[in-house]
Length: 95
Image 1 (tube, rainbow, N blue to C red):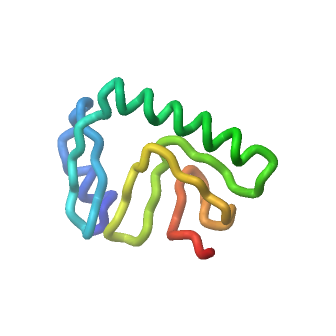
Image 2: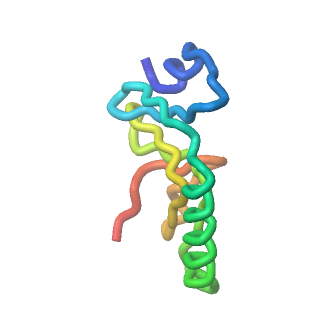
């Protein structure tokens, strides 16, 4: 069973974020205010650095590495636009 099917059968809890790692659902607590502030500061720094560069800063993206892994990192920097399909990031970047 793929992760989308697993998540659809899992009760929704507004206070948790769910990722799928190795085919297993992992619930994570929502970030606290200090975490959110730190993320905001990182976004500012990276956004300034990436201005006029080919890479793109994404906040809270849905990243899928394979059928068994779905993560939601706070931020991601994507330099290969080909891995963005629709509203998701697929795979990993090669450097």
